[in-house]
Image 1 (tube, helix red, strand yellow):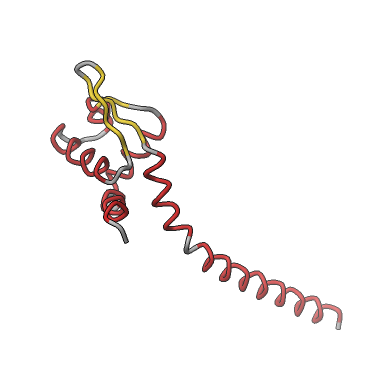
Image 2 (cartoon, rainbow, N blue to C red; image 1 turned 90 degrees about the vertical axis):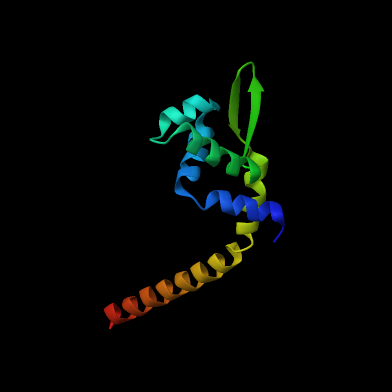
Length: 114
C-alpha cells in the first residue's frame, strides 16, 4: 500500500475526522467555522485538519486572513478505489445468499403443493 493511501486511512480512522469530512461535503468552511461545529479546541481541530490534509482528503487555501477548508474528492476517489477491489467478495456472497433464498422458496412451494 502506498504512503498516500496509508495517510488517507490514518485520517479516516478517527470519528471526528470522518465527521469533519461529512461537514465539508456539505460546504467549504473556514477553520473557525469548523471549530464552531465541534466541542474541540482550535488546536485540536487544526491537528485533525492537518491529518486530513496529509491524507489528501481536504485542501486548505488562504483567502485573505482566513484559511478555507474544502473536501478533496480526488483524494477520496483513491481510497474508494482501494475498497472497490473487495466488491467482488460482496457480489459472490450476495449471489450465494440469493441462490439459497431462491432454493428455500422453491422447497417451500413444493411442500405447499403436496
